[in-house]
Image 1 (tube, helix red, strand yellow):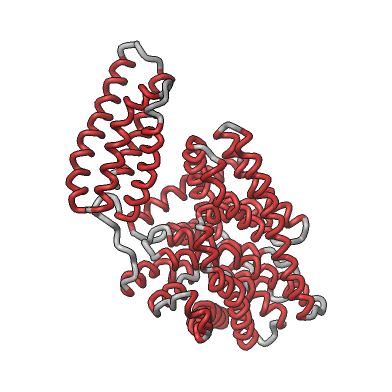
Image 2: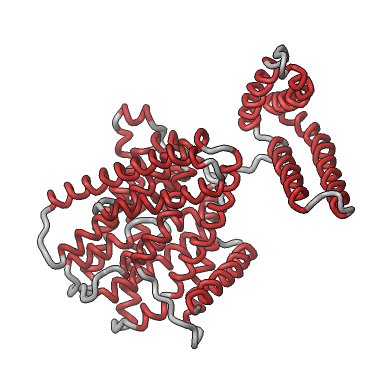
Length: 521
């Protein structure tokens, strides 16, 4: 019961801090971490320990799959070169820089421990990036690169971390390390692809939105656990499964499942994100209490490591973007990002749960373990607070944020809607001569022609369409509101059962949602 009470209490506190973050206009991840730190000092509260295997095996798979599910595979593939250079190259570079700085400031720390620290704090976190980027309107290519990097860089960092831990007690050659990295990565891709293909075949056969949604959760855990059991990358496996399902979802899932799954996944994402960042903050008491390092040296090392993590990303990103474009083939294939975009990519380096879980997973007796755990926590805190709270300001100052379209339906979206509506209209018109369906097709033809005509006018002239949109909103939404009121009155008169009312009201709600989407609201 204590575990249940603590969990429910944390959820309630998470909701409160999320509301506070919205009021203060800061990323809710920052509010949750700082709130967890504040709660950690309240006397009498039960101590909450973060089991690293639980953090990675329970929290990470659904959060990674949800991000991968939403990733546009075409954009991901088009930007694969910069994503891999960040996810692998920048991680290795940052780990090396942090290791050198840690060794210089703490000479007694073995090189293996220093590199392990670098590997722990090197990867920007997918969960943290998602929590911050969700509030901003950034250009699509920047979002693709940042989120794509954060999806796969954990694998590179964790492989480097494992070798550093092994190197603390044994000798391992660079060739063996590289070969193992390739095998771990390709093995993770193979496992994730296999699980993804199984899910693609399984989901349409279930025929029930609840079962299909539940199976989608099992898929991400199956990918991670199967990959880890085979000693390959669970992170890469989950991301691969998410990409496979995200690409196939439009074909294998029906409308009911997509609506239900999106609602459930959004809820689970919020819950797991909130608990992760809250628990990170609650670790402060135990981490600080075990340190015996002097405050002055601790402050210097903490500042130096955090600064190295932030600065090394700038040092890597700008040359990595400019130097390859000296080659004509690369210059023709990929447009050169401006310095503003590169600045945003460099500044979006928030760390999160993977770094802390990897630090806590260090074996007991590992050299300078307590110091490494504290530095990992401090780096997470600094990057979340400093970079997370200022990223929106940086984007505003650099003037690269995309402005919201206030004229109803965006012309590009209107064109897409027009294409879909025209195809639907052609299908109905083709049925007019059918002896069985012709009369029904004639009844509904007017609605389809009306919809296709409005969307065509929206794509051609947004200003005139905005005037029409106002009239349509009043007519259609007022009609739906009147229908709902009539149903409720009918129900209160005892002529309609509750379950029938709920079914009819849901139809009206979905129609209202559709109308608002068509009108760009």
